[in-house]
Amino acid sequence: MKLYNTLSGRKEEFTTADNAVGMYVCGITPYAPSHIGHAMMSVVFDVVRRYLEFKGYAVKHIQNFTDVDDKIITAANENGVSTEELAEANIAQYHDEMDTLNVLRAHVYPRATTEIPAIVSMIASLEEQGYAYNVNGDVYFRVGRKEDYGKLSRRSAEDLLYGARVEVDEAKEDPRDFALWKSQKPGEPAWDSPWGAGRPGWHIECSAMSMRYLPEGVDIHGGGQDLIFPHHENEIAQSESYSQTQPFARFWMHNGLLSINEDKMSKSIGNVITVSEALSRFSPPALRLFFLSSHYRSPLVYSVQNINAQERAIERIRNAAAPRNGSANGGMLDASEYRSVFVEAMDDDFSTPRALAAIFDLSREINRAAEQSKDVSAAQQTLRELVDILGIDIEHPPEDSDGDIAPFVELLVDIRAELRAARQFALADKIRDELTERGVTLEDSNSGTEWRYRAPHQGG
RNA sequence: GGCGACGUAGCCAAGUGGUUAAGGCAGGGGUCUGCAAAACCCCUAUCGGCGGUUCGAAUCCGCCCGUCGCCUCCA
Image (cartoon, rainbow, N blue to C red):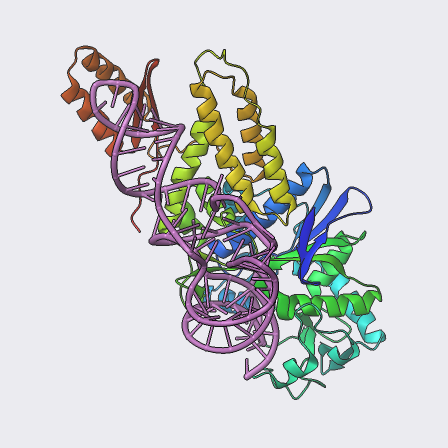
């Protein structure tokens, strides 16, 4: 399969020495509930993992939590809680929400604060090797010593030095240098180190953790496109300097960012949609379908209208996968062609839009074949398999959140059947219309009336 | 200012040299149905603009217009 590598700027053949794949994904900083951009990132890499596993790879998925940083400290102080408490609460919520979105849990979720020894030892080694220097308890990485610095983000030293916004800090030897260790300021949590009390800089944790948990090497290192610079660039610099080997990670994958009204989601602009908000409004399969409807490297614009459209699309797939009760006597539908198209699309840098097209084509073919009394059960099994690779759960249709309405709906369906038998259509239609308004759809067929709950349309 | 990405039907979105330009949603017309719903069938784009390369371009090159991201914490 081919995979786009940010490092080379093109698609490369993805191969591994054995069947094992080490995948490190930069996770969230849990200073607030997650927004749907985080959800999109998580879904993207969940699909990467699921597909690699489908291809037979044994994937080890590591995803970190940056549980101490300026924003966490600020937010904890504002809320009058410790940084641990704040991080803990947001991490728990993240896990709950990702479970709801059918995101498989990573194998390890290391946290900066529980990896201090590994971090300190790495910084110490960098200092010994001359890649880092200590200024009054702050330790910086010496960017000038890493001759190929900028190779991931394609930035030259000139770009960085003469760019408009390089931070001016007298303590640094070079404005491009970045902090590996930050000395403690009043009121901040801190850990002991050879340089005094302090905490890790932002980038070092990911280097330390990925090396510790993926000692065989990082095959895929992922994250949002906004992490390319400086975060991942700096990770490469410090990791390769430390180990004296490269590449630090073989494939760099970056997902496009989700924006709202053409602007990137950002706390400071105030245009954040939280995951919990989205989940209260849309079904998990519809959200996943929305995220996967465009290629992962493309930016995506949040749109209530578009996500709602995915609810209908999910129903289309669900209907195609639903059991048929007619007798099959017209041969069997072969779905292998659709499966091949799906695999071919996914093999091409995870082209989920094309993979989805194969799923919809197969859905139509199943419906068409069923009308011709063909046996579609095997094809439906394939459909379920493909949908499952994308983590889209069609087995659990939406339910009424207000409790179990089934007995009451069934009572009304029975009464309506009697009315229809008596040709009292006005009253029968009234029951159906009223149920529709309340989110229950009735479908009459030769074999009786089916009903299902359907999340009501939302405005937008 | 520097680096990068993008601009395809009403909306979303594939396609990156040659096919009738995928798929989803929405819309129109049919079939089925007591009427619906679901499903099926049919219909709805010449690819931001201009120029160039080529037998041939949405697909390559140049310029222009527009949008976005990064360059600072950020999935």
